[in-house]
Image (cartoon, rainbow, N blue to C red; front, side, top):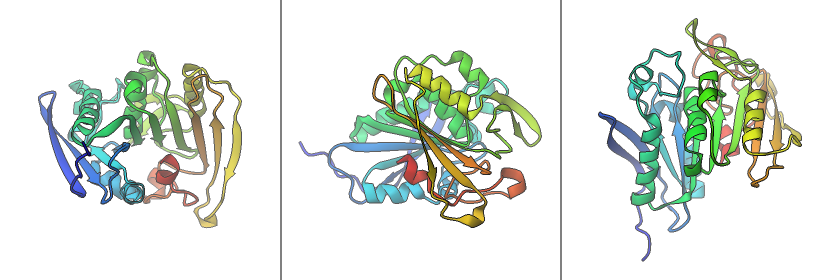
Length: 287
């Protein structure tokens, strides 16, 4: 039987999960594919929500979904903060050990059942703390997600202790070398002058995933075109594709970039979050 056509536009879905009502905002494109339907889940940063993620990315994933006919989902954290597996946070999600991994699993199952998304075409992209929870998903449920994108985040030491993925995971990481919150070279994560966890350096995180995916350290390096000379950033892309199971790992190093989404909004002052690269659109590269 032909797949049902879905009403295009925004759609709010609410789940009862872990004794809370949880929100997921979906964007359905006008010309959604009748088969081989894909889903990208976009996970917002700490202290934000679905609307905030859309603003930071300039609704880039929604625009891409209209051109490429895939579904976008924006799950929302409880009280705006994810339980990403760190033990250093005092947010409600961490304090009450909220099952955010289960929420993502429930969202994926809903999209497969109700939107007829192909199980092999589910992807996740996260920014900042949304990137941290994305890393946790890569550790715990990689078999349900085809690919992961982590922007302005890495893998925390707390997550590393518990991370033992039993399948491969293709991944792209995009990190700024002048990130004042999640340092590119690793160390303490700083928010409002408070230390909230220790992070691996971006290269260390990629090395961990290379080992997990049984990849060699052979790589290709290319400079991303410096399309905006006024943003004071340059970017390099390192690609590792010599992996046992044919998956791929990519690290984009944004030299002089901050705790920001390349091609997105400067959502706070440069003194607080650093510079936004305008040389490329992170949404397009991730897709």
